[in-house]
Image (cartoon, rainbow, N blue to C red; front, top):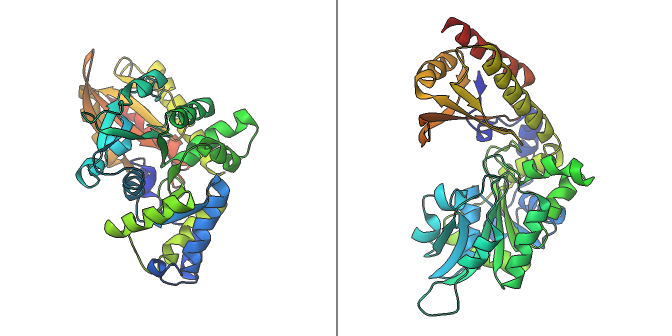
Length: 360
């Protein structure tokens, strides 16, 4: 089975399980779980922050961050397609009483700096108080470059606003950019965070942990965040069992993300070649550019209704949704490569697509 649905479907390796089984434990609510403390300190040192906080999910660390930066009635500037705005059940508004100010994304995944600046409200009682700029990196697999990240941080500082990174796949961005800047991925990740007040880092996506996310920031910010985490029900006890997986991942699973990127590019290139070679796919399947571990393909509804069940019968699992394009209804299919997708999985999947096209 090749499960391309998400990099959240990864299974912990035997070495990761052994670290979890042997982890020294305490009570994290009392702040004395040694493994969790070690994970938090390791991540803070790596990314250049004073402190970190372990929580169950990236959705929760993002919400904790926004509620720690903002008060009721404050406003956060977000992207229209940001996870914090679209995919987290409206938590910032429902639970945090924070007004989102969504902005449209450009094709490269960025927000125009002029749009961000224009969205900042004047100090007037008619308006919600703009307090926070949220950035996501990567977004839909697209990497926001270091120069852009620095420009947003500088704008926030100029306007005296806090700025937060939803870095669920920050390490994918770091791996993709590292060679361009002559840095290690770990150093690149630190550079991407420079100038930001907080970052949320997911451990249960490409890094391969079964559960967990980290929130990083200043000591004062993390102290506020602990209170919000408790309020949201995120205070857990012997978290070292889970934190041990995170520590293992940060030590062993960052550099290997390059393999996922290479497999995703191989998949994209292979599908592009099949579209060129096979009449059944030509004009019916479009392969979008790949930057990291996520590939999108736009498939005609008629073809998707046959191809996706065919692949599912052969153990290829995918996620898809319909949308309206200028040329009519399209099904956008997402393919995500991760540590449980091998190069042979990619080749077998490409062969299955080719077999389908030759039959139909």
